[in-house]
Image: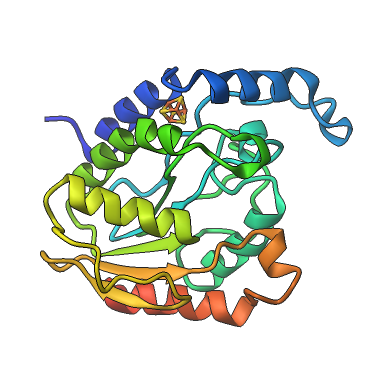
Length: 232
Ligand code: SF4
């Protein structure tokens, strides 16, 4: 039997090769070809972004999608853009990340007890994936969550991630109805079977620059996630 790390690596290799969404694949390749002037000397990743972190995680972060010049450039979730600059220091302070600064796939960052994924793994134009693209990518999420035997808590960053998690729970028979689930920052739910779900605003610049999501708010979310996961 393969180790959890080898199994997750094999899944990630299949994700990186995925071509299910022609619009997104074309957009990512085009962004990688043209590049932003500030990153002219970067070789953009330009492919589906694999999950990152601890394959035996108790906590899963579910995000929306890669940023065109963030993880579509670096190849790692939340790495190289404003969302990551806000998120990783919080993950470092709450004991999930080995360092606060995330700049590239080879910056030495490791995660402990935490895995990061997204409902869509290719950067969408205007950060808006089509419903069909979210559905295309959903089987990858089902497989990832299926591999996490010790999973206790999912932190959903943003409403689309929250809806994606509930859709996963319905597809996999863990949930029959979504009634009673409402996306509110810091709201907590327990799915039948015991999986905890925490809703959080996404650490996008739109939210963090306007003060809709502050550092203390996000710190509280991840401190609570540690507590619920029994990682205190
Ligand atoms: S968004 Fe997901 S399903 Fe679509 S091409 Fe990328 S990895 Fe594949």
